[in-house]
Length: 619
Image (tube, rainbow, N blue to C red; front, side):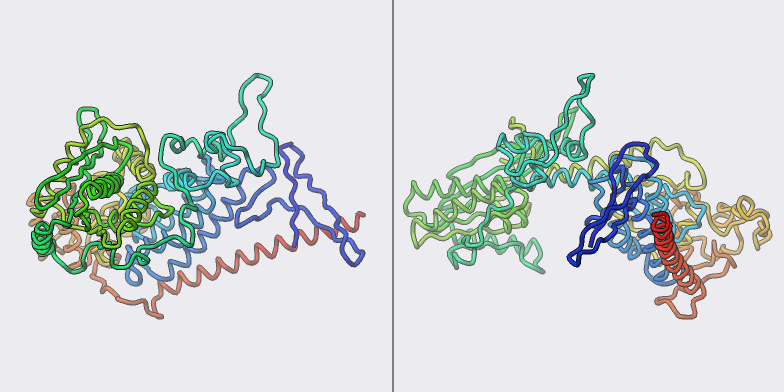
């Protein structure tokens, strides 16, 4: 297997000579040069523009989108929520494949991929082809494709903190990522030199990505090989080490009652030490950033014996504060046990299940340093005496548990302390989506309201679909979307896009408009009380742009045939049927598309073969 492609930035008009390779049987094989070469699914062209890769991925994603259209139409099949899940799992990964390699904000790439996403959005929402896609992006909670590419690229930048300094990727990055250590395998190409003007050349894609995240010396780094296969696990400690998360199917009040009873029994024993910890977040106020704090409180025989608090600043999250508090609690409890030899058993309680269950055994995951210190401290305490036991358990938070409430007070006080500027990987990962959502909302606010969706455009973008999307049947949701965008079976829509259609209402009320159907049409007076309950004035901004109004409008449409082609109610089908004409049309269209792609590929092969024969004839 061999492929050939010439890399060239010159205007050589695609000059691509062939090469001849000697074979074991003393013959020569002629290798023709192509315009692209495929390596690990990435199509590389001769000028490294990645235009061909994006084009091929867009075509592949479009075929997948057309295949999904067979599974649902505007009446039956998969719901809009299931179609959204299918798009995110099967279509979006195709378009964004290897995007950290090629994504640099190029508009031509965005245009090709946006066309595919727009087609998928219209199918998900059951909208007309003329529907503006900006409204559908907000409706289906799917961001513009450029934001998706930014999120994935920045996510890759954060994953660089999980690599060892000997990794080939890190060896091709700035020296700060290698901590001044020598390169084990130097890159085959020389480093870039300065130009004649003294300016540095354009950054490589990897160098540009490395600037999207924090400096390795100023934040958390993950060692991928911290845990050897022969490490001691929690099971190896047997009953001496107990790690318990939240119990299943138990209410918090009952769990708190049991916990308080257990603590009262432990307080009577001189050999027991009980430690509570908690993390807290202070919201940013008066221009000050938010702050994370932690607090630890220890008890022996019912008396408070030690307390400590701390702050992690604004570049961490509550999970980091909980894990840091757990690390401090473990250290303080074992030190107290050393000073008081009668202490044999330590019990640590936290209200964060993730921190409790992940604290022991360091993993290549967030909070690795705290996990390592906790594991080392616990193992050392258990090795000192065979009678020692250690338990890390979850307790319900804010349920009148004295120790938990006391730790919460210390944690809130800890948020007011000054902290060292240290970035956690948890904060960096969450910050990627937070910044993307903020940018999406800024663009949404800057865009002036226009078109039929302007009066309904009151719900800002967010990452999860709203209730009227997840709880409305497929057929009703399609009509609801068409009504909100004003691209529906309406007389005013026909007057604009389909002038040959009749524009009057069947009730004889003149031009059929959205306001007429919802507010005054006599055909639907029987169920208009549903809309009155949401708003007595039946203002369209409330009915189509507010939560209570959308719920009422969905119920109203479910009772009637408003915004349908015939004006009659359509029955919701639970499963697609073979006799479904709309489904058959989509399937036939999809197969035609597949056959067209095969013929196009076969035609390209024939053209290449014909060109090769002409070259052989000239020789």
